[in-house]
Image (cartoon, rainbow, N blue to C red; front, top):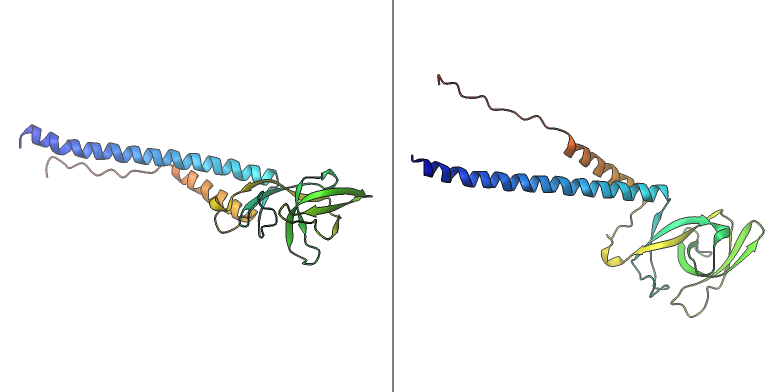
Length: 188
């Protein structure tokens, strides 16, 4: 077989190897970047005690729409201000919460009493809520429903994602043993 035929058969094989190596290297760096961003995000969320709440009604349109996810952070109850949007318990439905704008704050000894109103509602909420807990979740940001998965993420899901990405990151960085094929002996 002439040398040029051998070279032409080897050349495509080398370009496939180079392309495969490039794709593998790119994928590795993309996974590493994703892992680092995930680790940083999870750490920030855990350190800042941020959690997520899904918007269930249209009472805060246009600020928040049904299906959006609110990022909330606990703040001291005595630091609440008019204009803050807080996540508070519904008086008539224990265990349920609502996120409305605070329209008045009145200190009552060691407690705080607030009045709230949904931005889309024509009138304020028909109750004054006395906050007895030391901290109140206040909205710090939102994720529009159009880019949020259908499942509300909670702290345990985020920790699970963090650990999964960490294990993936470690597995990618762990060196692999390569098995070398025995060299054919000259006697065969």
